[in-house]
Length: 480
Image 1 (cartoon, rainbow, N blue to C red):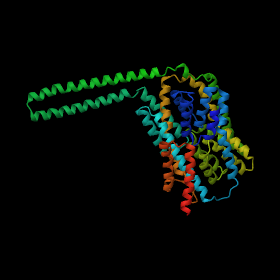
Image 2 (image 1 turned 90 degrees about the vertical axis):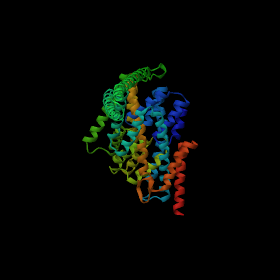
Image 3 (image 1 turned 30 degrees about the vertical axis):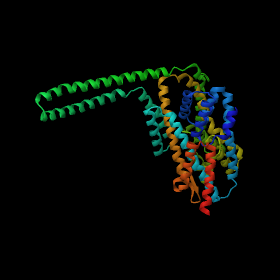
Image 4 (image 1 turned 30 degrees about the horizontal axis):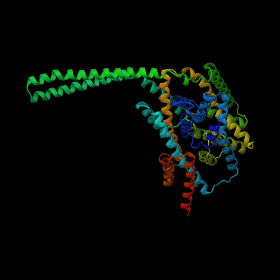
């Protein structure tokens, strides 16, 4: 529990940084799990909806010490940041319509430094996720696709397609047809080359010399082609055998958390509760505000894939568009949550509290509702999935799926970097947020945060704090 207390107060920077901290702490230092199990849990948590880093933390404690330890670890991990966001909501509710410009500078500096921290974590996670050409292609493709479009259904689709792509690649379902097409192309090219060679030989040498060349060259090329095809077939066979051997799970890596039947029952029970909440939300028009807040947060926690960076635009739609929280207060919370420890899903505590305050209800009630509703879906689903996972993780195709899901999740982290970059600069003329590239100072701040972590080993909390200092220096320079 001491390790959970420490991380609960020092884990800044969002999910990408959290995953790096988990790996260094639990896999490298404490050796609670090895590389393979860590990568499996990472992929499972990314493939399910909800707060990815929180689910990862929960699963590590669940496997190591059981349910009560996992539950206690979750509260230790999330409550420091949640309490901080609740206090922030109280302060924001009491400020006027405008903020001093130095506050905007501080918030922009924090955002700029956070971008650098997340980018560094994405690069480090990429080194773990990229194991071959296919995973390299998946990381690049998912990052590029995530930059070009954004929708509720889009990220889950990218993750699913990436898992399917690695299955197709690892089982070589397309290798046979592709090799046949390539063989046809090679034979066609050989025929063209031979015809060209014969024509040139006819012009420059005797008929006998050209005949000899025509007889021996095709046989040589055909022989080389046959050898190459045999080598490729042998390599594919060896790779398939290695994959089968890799799925023999040693006893030390077994995840006997619960039976698969209990895990399945837990998932079904959650889906039933979700259906009930959504039916009431959609059919009754005079529901109390706090219930509507719970329903919106419960829905967000259920349909969000990709972790904290994805939850921000969705919560803006479910809270700001409803008229419960002003756009300015939303952006203030967005900037400051990067400076708070723990998961970004604690943003729901801030929004829930402000919603309750603005409607005349208890701020504590709104904060608790936001906290429970946003975290419960992901934790229930991942707890149930651990029961199923222990039964299916030894299957070869599961490893192939996980490899693609893992690579796609890492690629989407680069998408999160871009989206935060696009709204990170806040000032009197940019109260809705704009790109950090508008002001070169923030570009330098981001670069310092990134290279400070690479070259000097500056920790994420220190980098974010220095970003705030850079923001205040910028304010002093431009107002001097």
